[in-house]
Length: 295
Image (cartoon, rainbow, N blue to C red):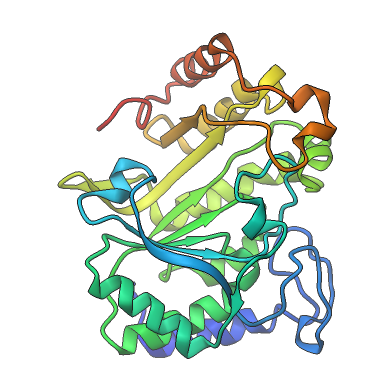
């Protein structure tokens, strides 16, 4: 983190002002979370943690040799009907803790030698997370911070994270707003995506890798859905147009029909090998090759 603990604490206070009415993400649902009202994320202002520890299932540039120091937060500002982490994101399994306890988790992951602090679904808890980062920084925390989010962000809030987040890792889920609304309850998702990616890239630039491990920059994920529902070719064109060909992109092929996917016949199967190959070909035709093969 490039900012002092004092400045990070000030940013946390600025973010906390977005809790009432809540406008931390693109829903801007306007509930008073400080008064106990719950918005689309279903979580109050205090951090709620499902699990934490070194994670070896992330991208190799995050995992390195000692793992990515991952904290899974409960709740999510998206309501994806096929979420693979639905117990955490949709059912909100987890334990509510205080800011000091969260800072201690960050320090524990630092002590365990994790290459980074990987914050999974952090958007709706940004004020508490940044406050905990300020306290952890005072305790000697010094690891790259990864903002592992769904891509449905507020540009205004992202600006308050500048100098705090080292690596942005958003999903780029959909090319069509109606599809985003149907499967993730996210109106305007595709329309908003270019601005979100551009702001993240403005802050941190292209992904910088030293000795096989990411130190800073932007890494974009895209999950291929069956029947072309994600609009992969258009999503990848959007990424290339907004960010340029040096963007590190992970085209993911691990979709499987879980959670509520069975309610939607078009989501009830895995993508075919042909669909996966077409998505990778679309990335390459857009000039995006970083991440498709190991650096």
